[in-house]
Length: 236
Image 1 (cartoon, rainbow, N blue to C red):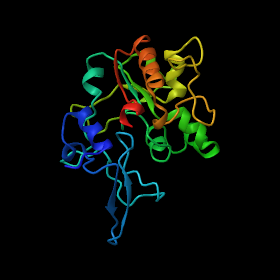
Image 2 (cartoon, rainbow, N blue to C red; image 1 turned 90 degrees about the horizontal axis):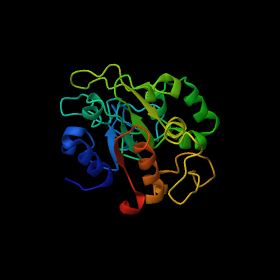
Image 3 (cartoon, rainbow, N blue to C red; image 1 turned 90 degrees about the vertical axis):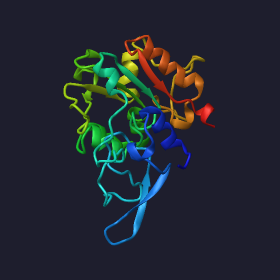
């Protein structure tokens, strides 16, 4: 099978080859329209997203991007931890956190949500606020409660069901919980922000060790014992 970023990372997370998690070709692919033409699909999209096509407002293929061999949404890798009572943090980890503001925001927050409205008013700030960072909580854990911006951690096809679990999606909601004394800073003491000065997630190319491991340390110190992280330096 082809070796590339998305399917390699997702295989390491899931423990199964790409034919069983739905991203066999990465980091992009083509999907067919009913008239025989094809469109662009991008492998990086949140776990429960349909196919992410940045060129079409409404893709003609609305099946899950993360797709098991039997046509269902692929089992999520954080479930075994959260079911065991452990909160699980994702730091720029492929498809376990929000990857874009086009399809991920309506999938997780809703098409008419305040978060979706922020995308319309300030797309760059919305990216910094909601993409790249997430915490999937154990059932009933207050960390991911509604008071902290928690949303239902919906996994519609998870074997055995997955009711009663919440998650925090994005720096906007995660940072106040893991850095309660002030803005989250990287290991060099700099406030974490994107290249244009928006406080929040600095982008996947901005996840140096100093940034990525700062998120990890803060999570570990504030009730998130299981952390998966991406470091852009190593990838480069």
